[in-house]
Amino acid sequence: MTQPSPPSVFAPELRKLRLARAARNFPAHDFLHRKVAEDALDRLETVQKRFERALFHGPGAPLLAEILTEKADVGEVTIAGESAAFLKALGTDAPVEARANALPFADKSFDLVVSLMSLHAEDDLPGALVEMRRVLEPDGLFIASFPAERTLSNLRQALRDAEAAVTGGVSPRVAPFVATKDAGGLLQRAGFALPVVDVQPVTVRYRNPMTLLQDLRGMGETLALAKGSRALRRDVLGQALATLDGQETVFEIGVLTGWAPHPSQPKPLKPGSAKASLADAVRGMKGD
Image (tube, rainbow, N blue to C red; front, side, top):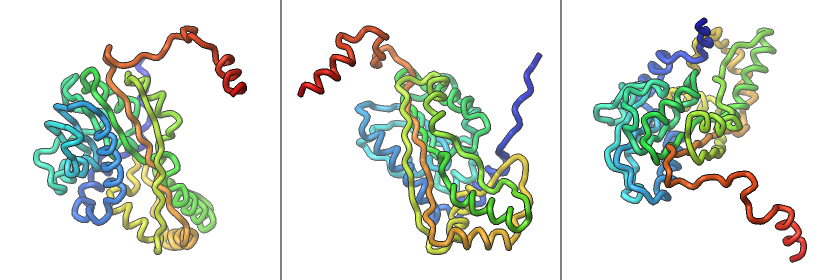
């Protein structure tokens, strides 16, 4: 018997529309995307390897292509994302419109895949990771950056408290984000070797909390859920923004790295194969 598909959380067409509308003024609000692109570049520059065919996916992809250096040693780059209109507006020639969980590329098409600011809007994150593993050739590198669980936690709480106080009920106002503690396991399940997960908090203090909402709109990151929320009342918004006045806003960026398996990669030691025990090492430290 076929199992029913889980209900959708996100609305891909609505997100695509939001991105396309944001493209015109995106450079005025791209600080977060630029930061993750710069971080991806820093990581690439430390890898002593030539990447012949790269896939950059997501709203941050054009920025990474723009700042690439020779030190990163990347050859042909394909740029893809949820909205071709958005990518074209940012100067990308012939972008590929594709969601992360349905990449229109053959197996082992790339030796580098970088996902920037798209995985957090996928219902099927495990499926998206499997897709990105599928298009990587052996010993290919995967890097992904996305907003993680603590992102906009103060905005979420302020809106929830204000709406409950004013109306007696609450609606979703901030999308759920990925829990980084689960990401390492998802990388392994998707077939990546040498998985690494780290978190980079980006803290911003806005003089006017309304600027935060303008940035989210300018990034194309306003709410795009499959099940719509009730219209946000002005008095609720006003009370929430008053709560946020003077607070810092945290964007927690999760970063995943992993490799498509290859025989040349280091292997973990088998249990019991160590030549010295942990107890001996601890005794030695105490004797120093």
